[in-house]
Image 1 (spheres, helix red, strand yellow):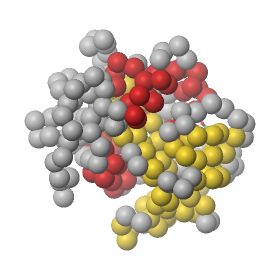
Image 2 (image 1 turned 30 degrees about the vertical axis):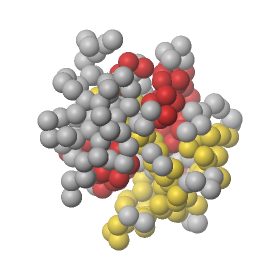
Image 3 (image 1 turned 180 degrees about the horizontal axis):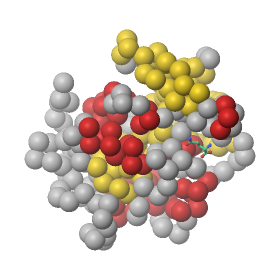
Amino acid sequence: MSGSDPGRASGAARRPGGAPAVGVLALQGDFALHARALERLETPCRHVRTAADLDGLAGLILPGGESTAMLKLMEGTGLEGALREFHVAGGALFGTCAGLILLAREVTGPEQRALGLLDTTVVRNGFGRQVDSFETDLAWTEDHVPVRGVFIRAPRIDRVGTGVRVLATFGGEPVLVREGRVLAATFHPELTEDTRLHRYFLEEVVGAGRPAGAGGEPPSREPSPA
Ligand code: GLN
């Protein structure tokens, strides 16, 4: 196990206060900004680069970046299988942009393999290329105050399965969705100072599950902090 990995958080998977430990997939992309958002919410964060790094985590954020590059970096590491096992074992997942592409059931534009943990069909760069990046306020179901959506070469969600709840739309299309323990956004909440989406993930998605992996942590039944 990689106790010497500088990205690993020291200590147990749970802080004494009971907050679950969350990881950020740190192969490529803007994982550091997600880690900062979690820090601001006083949540211990571990950089995840190997299957062993998932041990004892309750949740994992898959950041924006290049999904093709991330898939390449996962090759031969066992991380893809470990991520599926993490999900089956009760781990919560939050994918933003490229992270959403990794989580999808099916990816087009062009086709590429994906983890299949979120029942969606996703079109890469579906909102256009870099030059078409844009920002907009998005109404969402969890708060009357909109969230700022920063879209960068964003994927489009073309199809959602019946088990997928749409939490926000743009132009009538889903841009923030949840299927059980999997939350995903086509935009980049980590690029704003607003931590409400990260808080929602921690309190409502991670909080609803239980720690996964070989850490052997007992199921969490603690109420979410207000
Ligand atoms: N277009 C990128 C991809 O296909 C995602 C862009 C992003 O994460 N900002 O992976």
